[in-house]
Amino acid sequence: MDSARRWAGVVALAVGIFVLITIEELPIGVLSVMAPDLGVSEGVAGLAVTVPGLLAGAVALCTPVIVRGMDRRLVLVLALVSVVISCALSMVAPNFAVLLLARLFAGISIGLYWAVMAIVAIGQVPREHTARALTIAFSGAGGALVLGVPVAAWIGAHVGWRAAFAVVGILAAVVAVLLLVLVEPVRSPVKVTGSMMLAAARTRGVRYVLALTALVVVGQFITYSFVSPVLVERGGVGLTDIGLMLLLYGIAGLAGNFAVGPLLRRSPPTGVAVVVVGTTAALLAVLLVMDSPPLALLVMPLWGLFVGAISVALQAFIASEATAVLEEGTALNSAAFNTAIAVGALIGGLILDAAGQTPMILTSAIMVGAGALLAVHYLRTRVIS
Image (cartoon, rainbow, N blue to C red; front, side, top):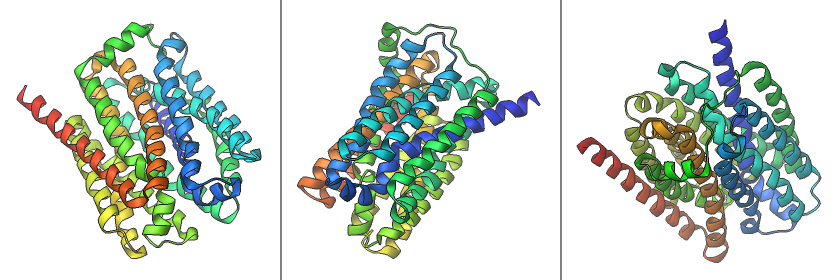
């Protein structure tokens, strides 16, 4: 019974990351209806992703030092309370400035949750089940792509983007209660300091994962942050069908999250290399092939299949290649991941407004391709050594 409850706690963590990914990427799904309602361009509206991402990166970086001996489960609950506040403010935002204020609370929640979620998931199960616990916990990210963002896009198109924020806020409150009931307390025996974070950043595994994140996640979100206008203008997809396209993307992403599990259990660096090479190929397909709704139906699931495995692959890489600095490495990876989302959205918005979609997507493909070369280089040198 205790084992069943612990695995139920891991599932609850997955639902929590579902909420966090949904609130982080919700503006992406409703961008085409939110931007005109608030009187800003789609490029400017992308700041709704950039601002919380930058703050999330800073919060994640500081979290291990700030929380110290605190129960990591309570950190997750505080993160979800911050989601509720963010959604409430977003619902009533009269202009884009107030929406950005609301998104600051989203940034706090994302940074807190991402920094400790993997540690809490690992703390629920015996060590030999670490990879499985991470796969289940991070399946919430794929689940958000399957249901969270597409459903939000559907609500935004048919009911209004404010209603989408309301739904996410209610779900966050429910999940906060579930975490308190199901998740076992997790405390770190080591009080992390700033010097320990710097030392962790110098270890080989952490250095590589930070470089991979900078290339791959920035590259991915340069284009994905503006997937709604890309689907409409490049793929010829109607506004009411964007939710369907994102649903297909998300279903494939959830499948990719679980499909990469066996590979990650054998060799996390190999899993990372496969995922990043596949993402590069998918972005090239967006650039060169996706010029009609039928082709969008083919390309979006391919893209989602590989992108859905990025989060769990990078975390498994940390758990495998930086075991001695797991909490610090996880926080650094979280900070880099969320900052990369923000930077990607910012760069994508600038390129989109200045040069259009083709240069934007090409930039994504080049950056993720560089990440693929780096992942293969690490794998080759690791095998040799």
